[in-house]
Image: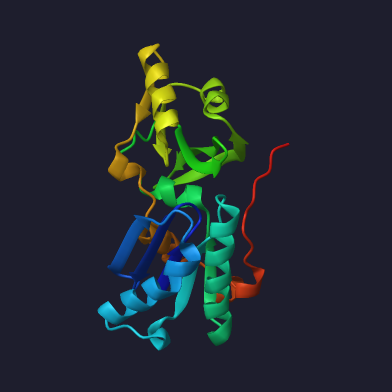
Amino acid sequence: MLLAIDTATPLLSLALHDGDRLVAECTFAVDRKHSAVLAPLIKQMLTQTDTTTSDISSLAVSVGPGSYTGLRIGVALAKGMAAARDLALVPVTTLDTIAAASSAANRSLPLIVTVPAGRSRIIWAIYRCEGDARRISGEMKLGSWDDLLAACHVPCTLTGEIDKDGLQKVHMARDAGERITLLSPAERFRRAGYMAQIAWGRLRSDDDRLYPADQVMPIYLKSP
């Protein structure tokens, strides 16, 4: 059983995945209460699914980019759980998790994935299709919605965590004729179930010894 933990932003998401099916998942906004709710929520999920910590054979954790405090809490707990039993800990970026949920997006168009970075800033990257998967193309960038909209190449598809100001700017750009397809709120929602799915794929392709807990580090993007 794989436990996936994502505390990278005000959204907290957990999932249990046995390699064939998603056993349990929960995702909700906790603002800055990650440290208070994370461990009890994991315990509750394990209890409700009749799963014990000894049933956990591997873990996945979101390494960001995202909130400094949120990432630190999630990564620290996941590393502690994995190190205690010498389990594989698969790092997955927030942007990869969001991109994995975008199956409804036009595969011929570039996919722009966003995540909030605080202080009215966002982090984004462009994804393109390679076979059945979407892969990041180029580097992650940090800036404002104006920066993103000025830099994006249209037509494109947009997904990720978008606040009210961001939605307003996107709708204004679309009203001005920019060919931006905005995925639905459900498709933009970052879910640990997709992170668990990514992690299982990597574990099946690689030796799990390639994922030692002590090598996992959060990704923090800073302004230039």
